[in-house]
Image (cartoon, rainbow, N blue to C red; front, side, top):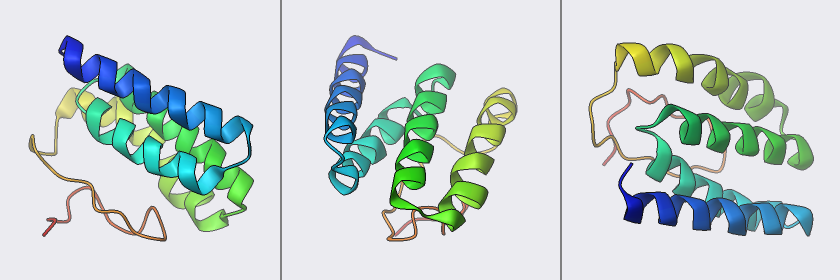
Length: 108
């Protein structure tokens, strides 16, 4: 991760954590989505963004996101990084369900 990308990632994580402490989970999730996009090509930042999104899902009481999306994402991140199954440049599309779009679904 280049220094500009690293700084942007850290800024989004810091903002998200602050909002999470204030129980502003919807706003925190927006920053976590940005952090996820910035960190998805690097294992540690990618896992961190998934972990924090899982925590937000728990606080929001979103069982679908907890048991399918976030948990699956945490499990797959490590194995997927070694296989690199998703091409560089896949964009994340924001949905209200958070985990309803597969990483292999083309974005518009």
